Image (tube, rainbow, N blue to C red; front, top):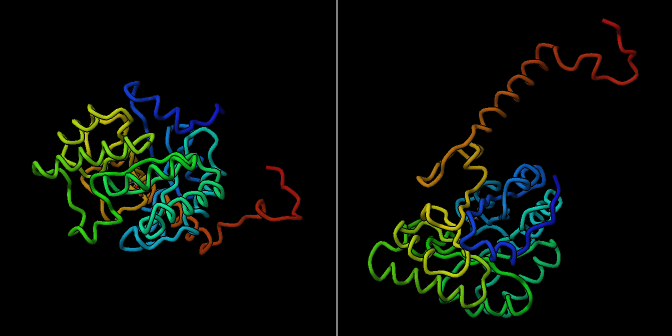
Length: 272
Ligand code: KIV
């Protein structure tokens, strides 16, 4: 089933019109699996941990994100593909951010970029949007900055924290983001921000009241089982399935059951 690809404006127009289902993908095969089911496919910098085995999301470069963005674009034809701007590629100045966003946008053909940050990143978001590149915001818990904020801490726990999340959402919306990811935030705060905002709020560890939800696909299908955060629901055990298939293959190679002559070239097929 092929329909026209969703763009950022289509996603923006979904505010208040049913929930958005969003997942990550980092390569072509996974992109093909999620494309027909998801509104947004995010090439998240979570790939640093999930694919490259790094301890934080900070170890990936713009070139790495672009290569994965290109692979995901080849595997999708329907979803709005968003590529993360990695740590170090956009924080120095709005000018640096535009150069990075343009590279990602032009070299992958994706529909939008995502960057982390609230009020302090509003000008940067506005400048990228003014350059014609749609931006998905990301507020609340910011994995790229977690190291400097005392770890992966839930946001909005006290009055000042809640007010800050609300200010961040407002600033990023006013800067022109077409939607905003809200991560690791107290439920009532995420719900309030969703009610108050004019763009879709996409939750992860936030609230069922958000306009959409996003998870890391590998977490959700059981391919990254080292650690399962509270906000993840497991919908499958792909890791176990792959391990069983690999085990069966190895057994059959060792006991001579694979390959048979049917898997070889230049051998006439024997009649049963
Ligand atoms: O990098 C990522 O996968 C993300 C999502 C978890 C929202 O930013």
